[in-house]
Amino acid sequence: MIDYYLIEGGGVIVEAFELAGDHTTVGLRSSLWRDGEWRGISGPQWRNDPELLAAVTPVDRDAAAAAYPGEWPDERQLPGEYVAIGGAPVLRLRDEPVPDGFRERRVYRVLFAGEPATDQFISGAGDEFVWHLHRVGGGVAWALDVTVLLTGADDAVGALLHELTADAKGLGLIPVIVERFA
Image (cartoon, rainbow, N blue to C red; front, side):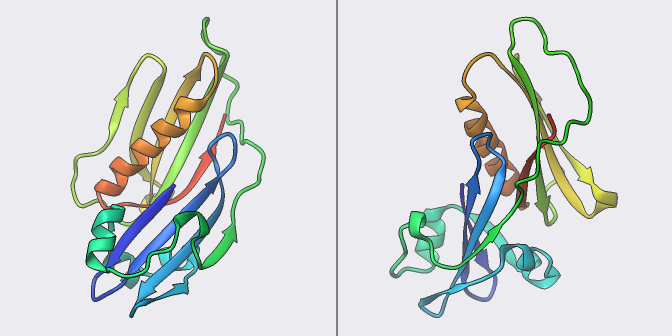
């Protein structure tokens, strides 16, 4: 999962989340493109800087490259600071039975920093998944909670989490981590 953020006043932050096989975050590499060169930047630290957080706008790669043309690195070899994240076992909050016809129930939480640019929040449901974006932590963060019922391989989980995270970024939120509760 690669994210791009334009910085008001100049520069772009490019980040690559490293995900485990179950689609939870295990690492983050963050780079800052400014004045024609790449510099390392701490992903966790810039999310705690209210001024910088307020000055970034999530964009796609094409918009970032158009705003700052030049030599872009191959995102698989993104320069910058790598921070290992996670590695904790799944936090099982409750032991709910898995409905007939499904092999497993997973509950994911994608945490976000920042404030949404709109009050149109993400929520939805399908036969095999439910999701909801809401405030957490006494109002200091946002969480996208996603419940997925699996029948076979979990390939669709990663695509769903990526799509929903992109939707939340479209609201102006900055992803922090993907965790799993069940």
